[in-house]
Image 1 (cartoon, helix red, strand yellow):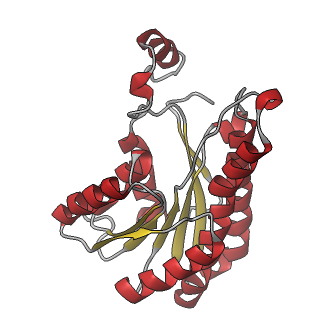
Image 2 (tube, helix red, strand yellow; image 1 turned 180 degrees about the vertical axis):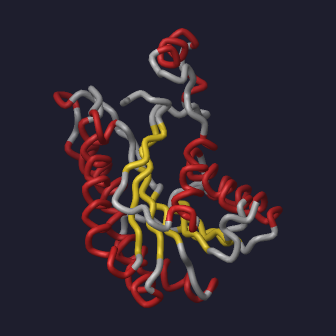
Length: 248
């Protein structure tokens, strides 16, 4: 498949989980990949090697998307290494779950910084390049928790709701320059982390979803392929829920 042939995509926080899956499926569709990681060196090396199998240009960058200066430096390095880029996927994120009464200020601040401030940093970082070429697609990975809330996740829900508001505002600002901004909001996605949960809990969650299964990393990645490709040229300011119908 060559839906993304001759395109270059920047993906933050791609060494594991959903970010890793996005990188692999975008490369499979022909996109060059510039991806970041913060601390998972071995996983980043492994992903870089695997991506090279798709005959696309690949480079990993150790960079903290929640740090403004590091993000600026990263964009300069990517332009120097790749010459151009077409898509940004803001994927970097963390959770620090707890009921509000037990939540530390530090855990609230860190989640907002990594999940929301990183979106500002990276979007602002790519904006100048996209404005020059009058083209670009920015995809933000949010969550259905940002749409409906979730007990024990006030910090995470606030950050992911913030991502949606940011994306819609950015779509209005940049639409006249043919720069698109959209959100992918995953629901219950089964990853290495969820495999440790009790099977009865998993079964209950699956049964509560209209499609009767948890989502896969590929489900999220395929939505990103669509929004990164020319197939979605007339789509901006939208939230694409990849949730099996949970919020229908």
